[in-house]
Length: 108
Image 1: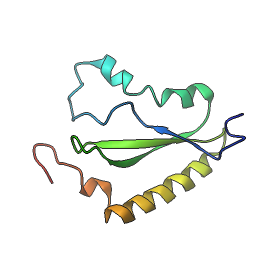
Image 2: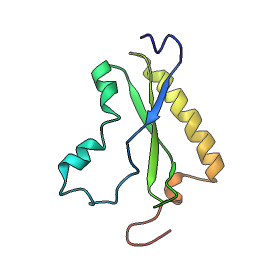
Image 3: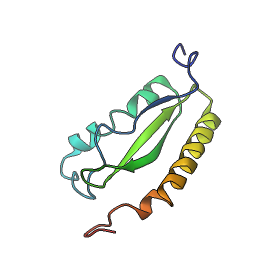
């Protein structure tokens, strides 16, 4: 509550690493769980959160995301922030992020 008294939303990474390749961590459930560490605080605090794709990592072209948290019962605030960011990023990218992402087994 004290944090939200000073800001409208809190921005954090969606995950501690970039996305991993499809099926890459399927045999390592601990690594899959650890990748969720940044989303757990919202659940523990009882506040809503939304994760938005925010780009592709330079080193591997895999997606990265940004997560926004809002005060309890302020889901609509997250939708407005997420929609605004998505609009800005789609305009900057010249289209949806998925159009720029590498495809499985090759490049786009």
